Image (cartoon, rainbow, N blue to C red; front, side):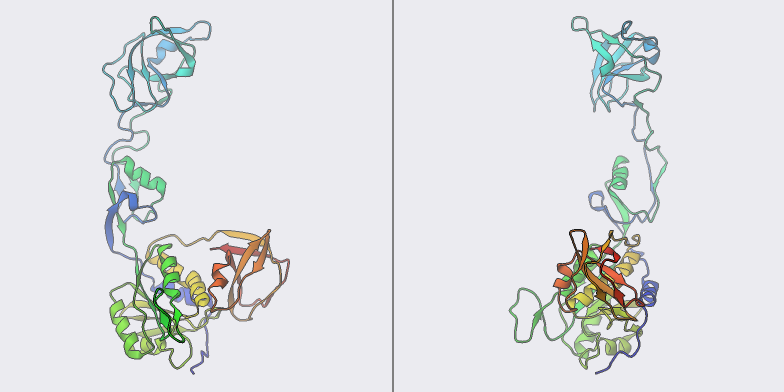
Length: 403
């Protein structure tokens, strides 16, 4: 056994990890329909006006505004309707004084017209087709001007912009079918241990199914990374070293298991032999036996094998690293403040990640054990208890960070 004699604070561990999290420089062009959540790699500039023509902003009648001046309920202005224009078609003719065109919202304005009277402020004569206008309009009223939304040559998005649904819509508005974005970081996920079995295969004596491959892959996908799952590696130096050889094509290698203090916990040995160790042991609970280093310049994060320890460290350490590499904004989990249902006793000197449920407006502890995935799956979120706090009393207001 090789006990962890020293640990570093969570903040220091995170700083070392983020210092190694170099933003991905690779780029790729992807279809616009797949672009939400990605980061723009090249500035987008409008090649045309949006809208590309003056258009009606209301259903009604396109008119020469001056023809409506003085119109009232008892003394309407009467105009001759010469055409009907729908969206997707162009007017056949220009209008002159005394004329109007029935027009749909979004349809191109006829030449000569400079305003639209809403249909609610008019009345069409059944026999003659003439239109009585009861309210005056001023020039440009109820008209969307050409280029009012986006002007040709206008910078639309800068490199580094996060593509939200509305920004994707702006690119669609200028006719873009695809967009150049930064590539997602590729994270090799390696579960280690003689006892680990891929779900779907029968368990042998002393074996368990691989949980961490799936929880880590899920969390990476949700935060801008691409998980590359590798076959589980047995507890030998040769197997782990071979697995590293297969993983170095990716941007980051994340181990689970093998980072603790037993004689078969060999990640530390392999990391020292192949690269450098930046820390081993973090003052957190759960998740103390965490190791971080580099091999051939690639970050290597060794996570605890117990599912709750592994996943909680993913929230605290892996998400910030991957989001920085993916050029995404810092993660801001939704937070709820509520009173604690019963006392929590923490471990002084270790920053605790404590899972909880929200029940009837109070916070109920849900943590069972580091090896129990239900400590997470049956929780709504977690509270963080600082290293210098040993007791959080019942009734105290706590901030729950929701999963």
